Amino acid sequence: MVPLRVFVTRLGLVVRVGEDRLDTPVRWVHVSELADPSRYLQGNELLLLAGTDFRPERSAEYVTGVKAAGIAALGFGVTPVFDRVPDELVAACREHGLPLLEVPASVAFESCAELFYGELLSSEMSEIKRLTETQRALIKTATGPSPLTRTLELLAAHTGGWALLHDRIRKREWAGGAPRIDADVRAAIDRVCASTYPASATMSSADQRVMVQSVAGPLPSGYALAVGAPVVAGVADRAVMMTAASLLSLLIPDPVDRWPSHQVGQAALALALDPYSPRWIQHAAAVFGVQSSGSLWRIVCARAVDRAGGARDVSTRARLGEFASLLASPFVDQDGAVSIALLPESAPLTRIVDELGRAGWLAGVSSAHPGTRLRAAHEEAARALRTALFQGTCVVSGTEVEGLAAALDMSRLRDYADRRFRPLHERRQQDAVDLLATLRVWLRHNGHWDRTAEELGVHRNTVRHRIGQIETSLGCRLGDADTRMELYLALRAIEEL
Image (tube, rainbow, N blue to C red; front, side, top):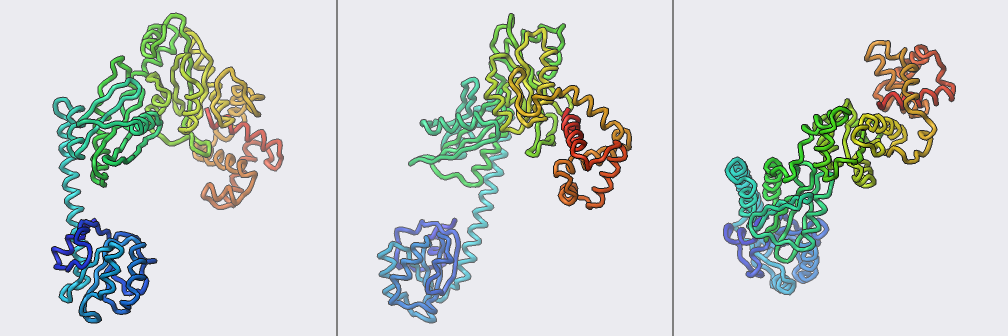
């Protein structure tokens, strides 16, 4: 925004009302000769008029309307209609506390607009320059000595306030400036740290505005950057904060208890699943803070799925990172589309299952096993995942399964599905993929040709041709309800694991 004072000093406008309000910010310059332009105003405008249809006796009504619309100031152009600003308008503006500027005949209204746009551009370029310089300084600081603390100090100096990095899991904090944290700010920091998604929060008090942003860091996650400043943050300030958050995610030191990264966890889990490598259970017990002798463990098998129940297209590294963060376990691995994790028996299953579900994961969780039987726990978790994928909710082994999934042996159903669809898999690979995809969508739409064609992006005759090929290959008639149910169950099994 541009202060009203700029128009007065740069264009030589005369202040008729509001000498003490020249710092009022102007968001836009608007010209209108309407008797009541209030419906076309959004607030903080410098409203210009030459009085073409202005009636001085209605000044009070006019000012009441534009004041209610939130304009910053009124600019009245003298001549050709009025040789000076009407006294009635001056009185009305003074009564309502609305700044009134007299625009001399030598100043075109277009000059006001040009000045406004020029100031905005100059301000924007200054912000870009300031942003670029600050980002460069942050990067330089992050590569120098004591990078974490100095980055926070630089961020605090940039905002004129303070900066704080909080590690909720291990109760660690680093600060720049003098943090002023009340109960509301602390609650916001805890809320952002606890989120399993990128999160942020903003709050204001009488003398400071605080922004909180989640930060990635060593597992288990739970980091937040809080920045407090005496003024409202602009776009450049937010960009600087995001840059700092990204840099800090690389600078956070390893925790005291030396949690391994999930890449190391992959190797650890692979050895843990080997019954001849009990030493890894001792290491895992130390990481989780439990006794290795007599301890019990669970294996979690999970898949990231979209809202429609299909596999989510996520890179292996991103999937593992998210999975490890949700379970607060560094011991994770990837087997195709399935993510696998090791958890102690004491892990809060209800919370973990809820968070996995909210984050778009379906999981099977084994019952508790001793460290020497993790291979069996893995097989149990894999079976539970098959059931979870079939019924659409996470499954903990040993708990009662509801619905049709409770009556089905998922392993035997998978074997049957492999045999049933073998004729399709023996065709060319792309043919098999297209036919199975068509059958899946066609069954889901209860045999509706047009809806199937629309979802697949093909012509309805293509759908009919493919269904005919499926009937020929499988030796069945899809007009039979029992056959459709049989193939639907088999598809559900074969498409998951």
